[in-house]
Image (cartoon, rainbow, N blue to C red; front, side, top):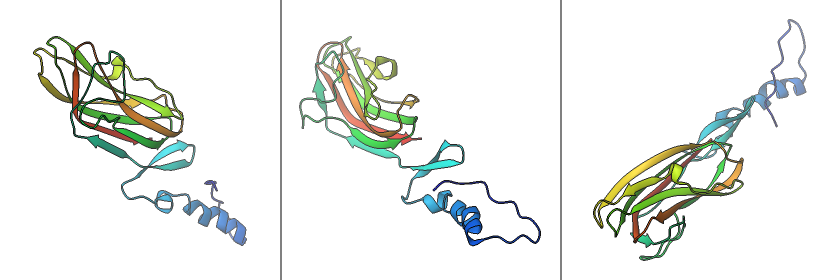
Length: 184
């Protein structure tokens, strides 16, 4: 069912049940209150006179894990050796991605990066162009920071967002990892 332009009332005209239902009932069923099914969700415009409920998503991992990889990887070593955080989110063509991480490196002067990749309906590789970056001035020094980016090149549908990590050299450590996606 789609929203349609309501009828214009004309004096002394009789409306059929079908006209009333299409013009009033069916249009009311296309409003945000009628479509809302999940607490904490919101609505995004998906086209002319069309909205879709969007559900924000959050994931975190607190343990400190490591990598020596110079290219982005989603799986870290040490601790539990986990991937992520990772979220599967239904999006339109845009989403606000917010990520945070405590990061450090075992080598002075070495750099660490935390970015994200998107798979599923979309295919977006992690990049230094939108990454948390930290140049470790002293071996083992730590920085906790966050970054947000409006991703505007998504393919609408089910998208998987996953944090990704890399190091210029040495052993990079990552802890208190947080990932939030607000789909539009």
